[in-house]
Length: 126
Image: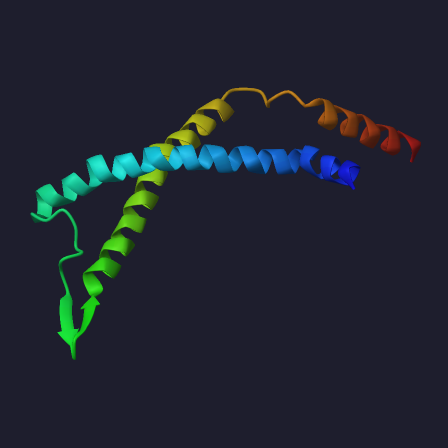
């Protein structure tokens, strides 16, 4: 039983997933800081209010409806998505594009080289 557990834990995809979760959590604080300290103040400077949570509030028979909180959550999602796209995805895409221009393809890994050799041997047999 312990041998099977050890094999499961030592699989590359499990370790990669664990690293991705840890890095993702750390990266989340960077994105949150960009939204809280740049995008939200920018919105406050333009519209005069830091968020929309106080907007669209009403009561019916003692029940309180905070539609502004839903609007604010949707805006926060859009702000986080915009921050990730414009500050991370777009620059990395530009960097990858620059690397691909005028440069040779990246060298093959050991696995890729072995698979290429096997492919070439199989072609030669035919």
